[in-house]
Figure 1 (tube, rainbow, N blue to C red):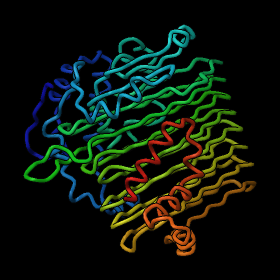
Figure 2 (cartoon, helix red, strand yellow):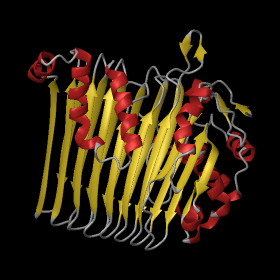
Figure 3 (tube, one colour):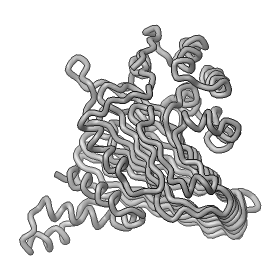
Length: 455
């Protein structure tokens, strides 16, 4: 892979990330002119945006002192079209590459290794391809949608940095009235020597369209060692979802990053009148995750169902900030996030339902359930309501509890070993969310990884 080297000074300081470097990065990646301009605009915003501080409410429970962004970005590997797949990559990607799916997009280190769409969907005007191909083949359409409506460059520090380096990812567009019955598949793998990833997912369903997209992210358990320690890896992703009138989308996103990955994402969906979104998130890997997930109900009668299953062990930290924004009347949102924790792991969920003036007849709910499997684990659950309309139904709930002795005793008394009993209880805890994943293969892989974490 080609390598571009920056000066060793911290990149987080204004002016250290130069225009010349970004232009060299874009040139090496063979970007079209409009994408180069988008990167340079992101650079301008990034320079003007302060880095997150512990004094910021959303970052108050976050300790980034161990994360060395300057070291991670000091050498950035640029993706090429020729990616050698090692055994780990093949084990992860083969089920996607050979999947019986109408569309498959797979990446290694930001470069596409598979980009396939069945001809019958192509003939109906469906776009399902990698970001680089879309930047040329659908330039005008992509330029109008990429980081212009949902996740914007001005949203946050890491959103702007993502705009500078975004590379790899999936673009899905389903035209008006087209219904895709079988799930589309996408996969992203980062190899052990990869230090940074910037995948971008853009999904646009036009009026009356329907689709299901299942996307998975993974890397080796430990990266290339540096001075005897796994090297830090930085993943900075974005997800944009736009649903037109009466469109329906099932979107499943599961990350199983290695334990050296610092994972930051900004994810947002815009729902217009009558649209329905079922969004399932899964978090198993990474050293540290900080994700902002938002659903904006912009048109009357929209429905957003947000589900999450997260399992943290060791010293993992998983932080999720969710926002359900009711801007139009007569909309419904329902969030259920479930966390299991063991060892010294920590999870933080901060959820907010905001009802804007005029959003009467809102029906909104949020719940966060936490299951602690050790005394040293910690779960912070922070629900919130912000209501500016008077004819609404908005409720929330959160629980943090230990593994109960009674069901363990019941299972053990019937000859089930302790580890197996623990696995059955945890699977039962997660079942209401896992059952919502519309593909058996993905459900089984998620359950297998949960079983491995239990031991």
